Length: 325
Image 1: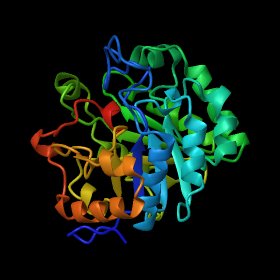
Image 2: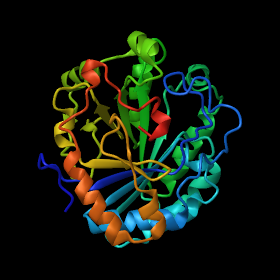
Image 3: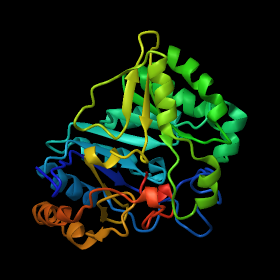
């Protein structure tokens, strides 16, 4: 089992398959991806390389893999990537985080390839506000894709970044939706990155304030699975769905860390806000999963106790599209 010097065990890998995103979210990439870049990013890991990565992590006890971006659906071979992860012995759960742009036309193929869990970013249920946040008038397509995922029996979660000036007023609309819709809606605190300092200052909302309100209204916390992400989830008997809170600025956020990240170019990041990643591309390309696993085991000893977001230090993370958050 992969374990760091603080006794934390790592069951969960977040693997970016592209650093490109086709949305222009105001809290992440308001100016888009820039001109002249490939829609699959710069030399991303191939299906064969992803297979090597997954075999290495599975041998170290990883049980859950989430494919992230940027926007993973921009990869033309995404079905093959899902299948490669699903086919690896030891991996119990295959997940994707997507902006939902192409979801209705692609979710059936992802399901057939072995997808177990879907996370869709929906930062507002108001079409006009959704367009202002993301730069795209695609809310109806994202919601249609979510409906289809539920029909297929895929465990579905919806991510909404809390933004004081843009979607906080829609909190009740979100709760009304969850009353009838069997998804887990996770409210995520806006995180400061290298590119969003002014935006963060005017839009950050403490997730603990939302959490206090939920508890007061009768929501009860769900026991966290060992391969779960960082959200604290709550249920209510009157609601079909659940609500989760991801609060990276809380004092104990990093104590239960169980996840590592790898960039689309094969760099291992021990933390989303680390100063740099460790370039493992040469070992990955060689196809030796055993040697790769040994190197990962050596590197994990350097993982810090926690991030330094409270001090305004964001490491090498310019925007969340770089590693999928």
